[in-house]
Structure formats: structure tokens, C-alpha cells
Amino acid sequence: EVQLVQSGAEVKKPGESLKISCKASGYTFSTYWIGWVRQMPGKGLEWMAIIFPSDSETRYSPSFQGQVTISADKSINTAYLQWSSLKASDTAVYYCARHGTLGATKDAFDVWGRGTVVTVSS
Amino acid sequence: DIVMTQSPDSLAVSLGERATINCKSSQNILYSSNNKNYLAWYQHKPGQPPKLLFSWASTRASGVPDRFRATGSGTDFSLTIDSLQAEDVAVYYCQHYYNTPRAFGQGTKVEIK
Image (cartoon, rainbow over all chains, first blue to last red; front, top):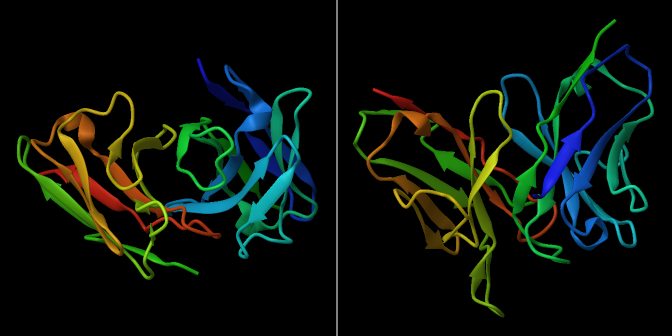
């Protein structure tokens, strides 16, 4: 069974750094693009970025470029989303999700993690 | 950037009746080279991750009941739920994946009347 298991909820202060994870199983991790989607409280879904674990090629939304960093470690089948300096406005649920077609850069997300709640508050 | 606009923002439909959600892209998302529309539909229930319903505008994902159907091409798309069931209460999103950034629509909340 294809699964994406995300790391647990985080409570952080503004200015702190954070790295959340998404561990994949049930498929060849390096050969499917995987990405991150934000949902702020009471709001809709926002596409953030995707990465191809085989060579770490990335695509970012301009809205998130420079604000977060996406990475992947294919040796442990895990994708990451990280912040160097959190803001209160980063408070949200962050979902990881996988493209549905092997190697396809442009595709829908067919498998989703359950989400990581990030709360940033002083 | 391509902007996805859904209508309505919410709708209430009686059990067993039809619900239709529209999605309009600000640019054509049909690739002429392969005649594919780069559009997906998702269902999102509270406390759960989003679930893929359709990709390529009308290709039903595995396990999606056939009361769900999706149509459209170019810039105008729709998702229809024939005979709404209680378990269909959710927020529905369209998303293009034609280029970067791959935007979602703002979502349409479907409730029971």
C-alpha cells in the first residue's frame, strides 16, 4: 500500500527554525514527484512546491520561493519542508502529496499524507 | 499565473439530488500536443487529507463512485455529484497542473439541505 506518513504537530515561536517530514512507503520513492500543500486556518489549499527525489529537482510557487525549502533524502524515502525563521503567518496544516504517474512533472496528487499541524505563536 | 475560480462558494443540496460545481481557469489548460486538460478535482473532508477524485479533467480515480462525474475542456470545467449522499458533504477543489504554480480553486463547500 502506498503511504505517506508525516511527522507530528509542532508548536514553535516566531523566528525559530523547523523541518517537517514525510516518509513514503509502498512505492519507489525516487521516481515520483512529491510536493507540499498548505492549508491555513479556515482557508483553502495552496500549492507550495514539488521535488523529484531522484535528482532533487524542484519547482516552487513564487509565493513560497525563498520562504521555505523543500528537500528529499532518497536513502530513507523521506521528503522535507523546512523554514529558517518562522512567522505567525506560517501557522497552518501542511500536507505532503505524491504525483500519480511515475516521473511525471505535471500531474495530480494521488496520495496524500494526513497533514502536519504547525502552530507559530509567541 | 493561472487563476482557478470556482462557483458557487457553497451549495446546499437535498439528499438524492444533483450538485454541480464549476471551475474556470484564467488560461487554457488544454495541451494541444496530447489533447489533455491538466486539471484535477479533490474532495476534502474535515480532519482528513484531500482525496483525488479526477485527473486529466475527467479520468475518475480508483474507488471513486460513479455518481461523481467531471467534464469540461480548455478553461471551463465542472464536477457533478448525481444523487448526493450524506458522505459527500465536503469541500471540493479543482486544481490545474499545466504549469507552475499549480493553483487550486478557492473551494466549494457542499452541504445537505
